[in-house]
Amino acid sequence: MDITPPAREFRILSHGMLGYGFPQESLARAVDAGIDLIAVDAGSTDPGPYYLGSGRLFGARDMIIRDLFMLIDAQEATGAPIIIGSAGGAGTDVQVDQLLDALSEVLSERSLQKRVAVIRSEIDKETLQIALEEGRIRTFETGQDLTKADIDAACHIVAQIGPEPIMAALADKPDIVISGRAWDVANVAALPLKLGYPKGLAFHMGKILECGGQAALPVEGSDLLVGILSVDAFVVESPHARKVCTVESISAHTLYEKINPVRLPGPGGIVDLRAVQFEQIDPARVRVTGSEFEEAEVYTVKLEGARSVGYRHIAIGGIRDPRMIAQIDEIQTAIRARLMQNLEGRVAPDAYQLTIRRYGLDGVMGAMEPHQTPAHELGLLIDAVGDTPQIAETVCAMTRSLLLHWGYPGRVATAGNVAFPFSPADVPAGEVFEFNIYHLMELADPVAIFPHEILEMPR
Amino acid sequence: MNLGDIASVVRSKNAGPFVLTFDVLLPDIGSFEQLQAGGKLTRETVANAYGVSPNEILEFSFYPFANAVKFSLRRPIPSGAPDDTDVYGAQQHVPLMEIDVG
Image: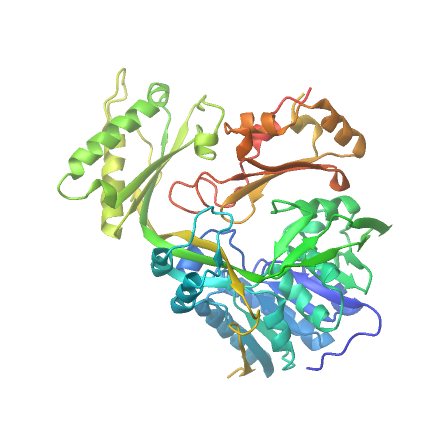
């Protein structure tokens, strides 16, 4: 597919999360107006460490296929390249493969042949150990230095690539780019940068477009968003007939999920929004000017890694008795002590972690909860994480039975303390992971360790 | 009057897996300036609302371009790790909403 600079302005259609869906009419209107690029984010760290640790696809595969069908049809109608970043949720190699598999199914069904560039951004441990030894790893928001042990323990480690590897892939004129973990901005900005648009504007537009329709009002579920880039400004509009972008909605979105909304760090530098102007050019569209980019002296990419911490088994139940609710802290302390006694010689105390969540008291905020008055009923979630699935199951079952039959002062309901809605009460909840790498890696070349391959698909 | 009574948006959300970030949006420049001048929403009052010390509040700042106030907090437990209560960090806003701003 040829990439030629559009005569005047460059129109980008953004989908903020592959598999979340969008209204058909939004896509149809965007296609009618013309599109030069379809940029799609397929991942985030937001759903937690599970997808990075396990390599499982985030989102329902059927919904991802639904979105792919519609976007491929939009490509057929417009000729716009499609760039999908953070494939599969966390952008691991296995998730890239799962997305390629889904894409292959869509192309086969449509009897289409496409040229697909694939960029992998999983980092092998040896490469990272060398970077660590060479002092090219920086501590970041965790406040913890990276260690050799962290690297060894990680199940998967990905780097959040900048636009440069995508720009390199675009030189081979693919119809579709599928990349591993990528800065969400890069999906939007890579092609405009290749065409010579300024970094500050392209990156800021990427930041606004990366969540799709969330920056347009009213927010009614997932939707698409359109950015129109020129050399000195960009315009944001919703392709949906009833939705509007306002200075308020766009500037509010600028704050979203960031520590500092006017200095946004990314690969290779900082997007500087201190001089940005938002202008309502008509009731539905906002024009943005003044976005700058400050190049960093040393190029860095963010690393994300997750390690396994065990297996979870859970049980859900409710307490209605006010006498028990009033003593819940003491009862839990006593049950923990008895649990340890009962498990002695069979399960070591450091082989499991038990959390009893109390919804209706502090289940949502934990230790940060300022209100200590319980509701008239408490939802209990017994959450046992053990070194093995068997340990988790044992701890969960033992805790459940202790809670059900615990005798506490003033107890009148001697038949049982907890209403369990299900049989069985205990259910396995799979492997548990935690982020254990969240650091910056210095790179002399932003492309070299993220090469691309070109596939003719379906294979 | 509580912040929740005058703000159009009070929200919390992850800014990466290790940081919670909080946004307050005021409906207009008048209410924004009144809030800033009132001195009731400060690094100290938000620290108090979350039971942390003021130096744990990251980048507390007023942003006139969006009629907004914003600060962040390192998560007590990283997103999705055992013991975390809120993987997306989207339901940690209520103590902020309940701050008395006069």
